[in-house]
Image 1 (tube, rainbow, N blue to C red):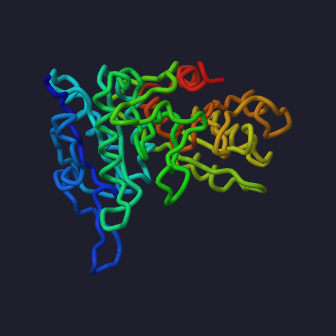
Image 2: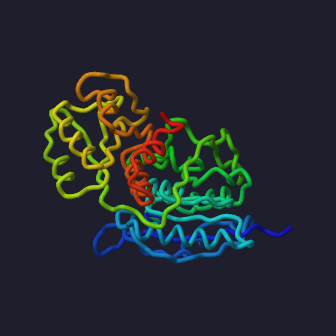
Image 3: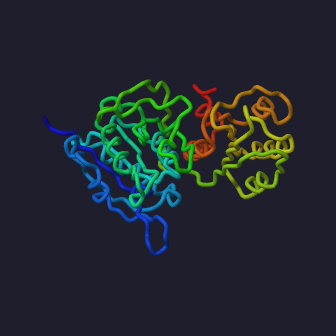
Length: 328
C-alpha cells in the first residue's frame, strides 16, 4: 500500500531550538531534517517532504511572512502527491498564524500547525512527539474540511478556538469547548465536528489595525493617539460581556465618525460579547453607536480578522456581517 506524502514547512520556534552555551538561553538552531531525525518510525506512516522556510522565534513572525507561507501552502495543496501540509511554528504567535491561515485558505487538504514547549536541550523535549502527532493528523481523512488544526500534546484543536493558556505547560493550547479530537495509537480520533468557518479572500492586509486592552478608570490617551495617527481599525478587549469605562465613549464615537472600524471583544479568557448592558459604555450602548462585536474571538485573532477584512473593503456593513453573522 502506497504511503501518503506530507509536506512540512519549517519556520523555527522552540521546536527547532537548543541551548546556546555562550548566552545560556535557547535559540533556533535545528534544521528540519535534524528535528525529523528525532521522530522515530515516522517513515512507516508517511513519506515526508521538508521545506526549510526560516529559523526564527515566534515573536519575529510578521504578516509578510504569513502571506508567503499561505502561498506556499496553496502551491503544495495543488500537487496530487501531497496529502497534507504541516507548518512548524513558535508557540508565542502560533495561534495567530494558524487563525490567519484558517481565514485565508480554502483548500480540500489538511493543514496542521505544530510547535513545542520545551527545546531539544531540555529533558522531556516534546517537539518530536508533537510532530509525530501532527503527521498522524495530516494524513487522516478526519482532518479534511476542518480548517487549520493545531496539534500539541496529542490534542487536536481548531485554529479559531485554540489559545495558549500557560507559559510553560505542555498542554498549554486549550479551547473553551475542548479539543475536536485526540491522537490515539497513531490515529486522529474526532470528538466533534466544525459547523461554521470563515474565508476571507484577499492578497493584501491593512497593517494599521491596533489592539487595545481596557482597564478600570482608563483614559482616552491611547485611543485618541490611534485615531489621530490614522488607524483604519481598532480592536478593544473590553470588560466582561463587552463593556467599557464611560470616558472612552466620546473617543469611540469620533473613531466611528471617521469610518474607523471599532471591534469589541472580551478580555475574559472565554465567552462572547453581547448587548447585555445599556448604561453608558455598556455593550448595548456601544453597539448602538456602531461598534462591531467580535463574538468569542480573542483580541489578537480579532485583529487578524479585521486586517484581512479591511484588505477587502472599507464597507462597515460587510465587516460587521463578517464578524457578527453566525456568532452574535
